[in-house]
Length: 257
Figure 1 (cartoon, rainbow, N blue to C red):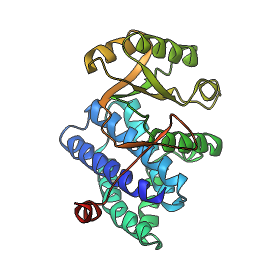
Figure 2: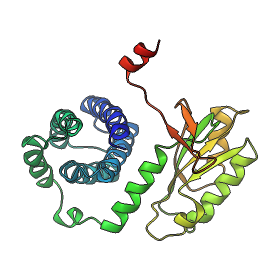
Figure 3: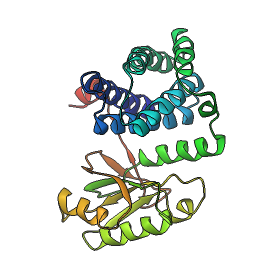
């Protein structure tokens, strides 16, 4: 799990860094604010799953900053500076985790700087919600056997029955191509802690434009991201139909060749 986290974590961190650099030039770029928020949210959930609590604390506050930026449709440059500094510190923190060492002392310092920028009431997170989010991020790192498309959907915050809306989305997608997997499942979506985000893996026989049109046609969709599923997967013998992402170190692949 730690090896998967380190690989995914570095990719997410690069994504955050790239979006923040865009926001340096255009602080009101909503697409970049949303993308940075999603990447930080995912990185926080995965960090919690592998027990990197110091990193979770910093990312939790960063998530609050980016959430405020989403509400304000712009991010202050002072906040951007601290978030960029955090990215610089998270890289050696990931390296330390790989070596089973304590994170750099600078991580605690940057967390205090971040907390100074967030209203106090926002710093009190929900442990239950954080655990649900952590579990969801681990499940989302798992693909489905034979999947050709991955669709990440966020139900709008004003939707009256988000779980019912998710069901409509899945039914519309099943009319386009084969639905292979939905995470979280319908039981988890019925829980009051569910935030309206879910992922669907699809088979072949369609294209991104048709898939996105099917999702948005369900109504009350805040976000929809359609991507080719390119992760290698192997079927789990213990749980038929469930696959796990396989990432191979370059040196091992060279040795094999």
